[in-house]
Image (tube, rainbow, N blue to C red; front, side, top):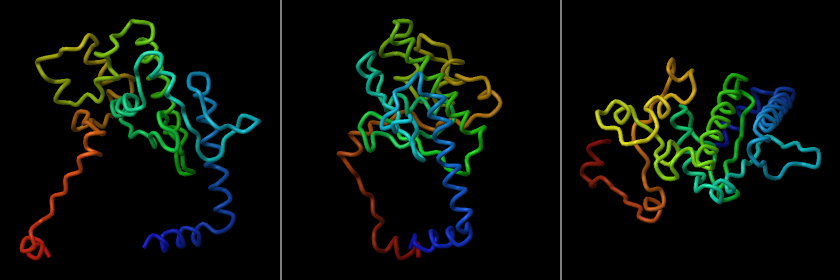
Length: 203
């Protein structure tokens, strides 16, 4: 059960620890929101412009302006060695960012730097500097095998595809596969169950 984990966390943190964790989570969310607010629309802010421990980035305007959607941005984050935040919940076409109290400022800035760089990539598509279909966002993520292959059919460089920010040349987590058809997978679930005798043998 998950309940003992929650109980142990509460017991170990204590009342002051829980209060401090809450403060840091809210501080982290607002710091990131302030870094991104000039380039992305942030939904559901309070009257003072603040958010709680999470904030929602609206990506729908980019779908309207140049055909780049939330999936494209989520997949491009893989090229920045990041797993995308919660996508399209509770609002379709958005990312919900929930930085926890344990995230370092380095990690917060790394995500913000990635999102700001992606915004520039979107702007290139909006301004016609990048092809609307054959661009770093629509083709993301870029695997190591693809980048090292002899054949390269994209109008942008391998360097732009794989190392969009300088630090990635020193430390990068490579996506192992290209993009899959998420919608098809959701609508065509395939379950593979081991036969009874195989399951017994495994136990």
